[in-house]
Image (cartoon, rainbow, N blue to C red; front, side, top):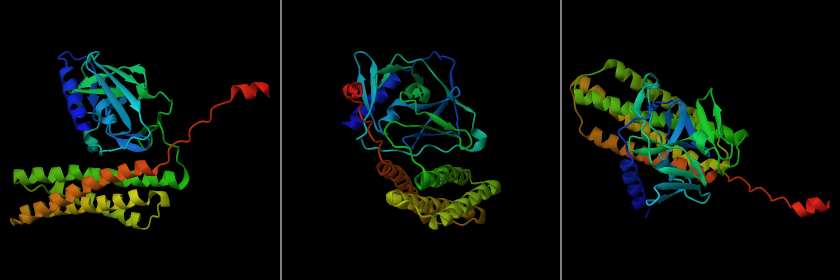
Length: 304
């Protein structure tokens, strides 16, 4: 049923695509967006962080589409399983570049019963974080370049908060591995050895190894042991995949070839992708939900 809904929503958003731009732009951003401590793919919409409506379905929200009224209703479900997927890495020199323009959409979006404006970006419906900030929990960390918003999780502090920071420091390097491997693959296709590129990739693998060595000595809070282990293996396989691609690059320089290396790299890459997404899914279950607020007994207060 979920797959059918996803396909239907995708078709819907494509049908809502217009050829008249509203003047807005989507820029490449280096700001990480978190919903209930889980990293969510995001966009810079004219200076504001935005997320795709259909992505929210994987982050604890129910999406209800009504074709007759062309409306989408989004509601938070605290019991829904979170199925996150790691955002894409962009190198520093690409930050601020325009990815594509935005277009008006005739789809009406309601978030927890409240109408929120939306835009069409490449056939997909997006909403700004500030417009879905119904609980006034939206916050920013300018130094870390992070935006976060909470709907059902309790605030973390102390060792728990430290673990979240450590978790995403490593996760960010794992995600970067995809970018570095694509660069090497492009070099291999061109057939021309790029010394500078290979130096950059070597720097990346050394940086990831250094993080992993520090992580070996790190003791995470007991409540986060499962996500910590899954994150570790995601990092291991990401580094294996990138080192294997690096070896393929060196073979290009030396004029040698080992066809098995690509097969090994592909397996390491797939394992890492699964493990990193699973690590975030496990993390979502490890973070305790916010305690429900106790209702105030107005009559008793009045009698007192």
